[in-house]
Image (cartoon, rainbow, N blue to C red):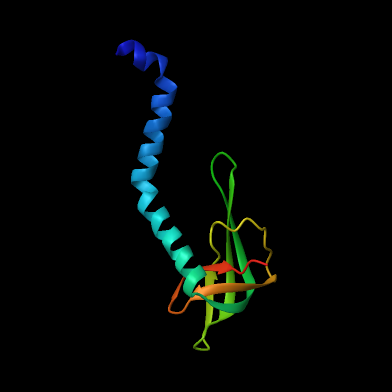
Length: 114
């Protein structure tokens, strides 16, 4: 058994990190995926403008971007919301795009493809 652990230490370490990650963030990831699917199925389309882009860098220099858009919802109120994290396009402030959102739930919007 000790020999097996020695031979597979790297694999065991990676598996442990994955398990810890899933325990810590799994529910959040699943909830976001469900919300994303719900937006695809039930979302309302709207025209939006990129209002700001927040760029963070971690201690290793890795960059993460949160892109916020402003749009008028179906009730006529102006909303500012973050775009879905799966968006890989590098939008800039002032860019115009078509989005989908869930009325009354403005914590996540998605760009319309195509």
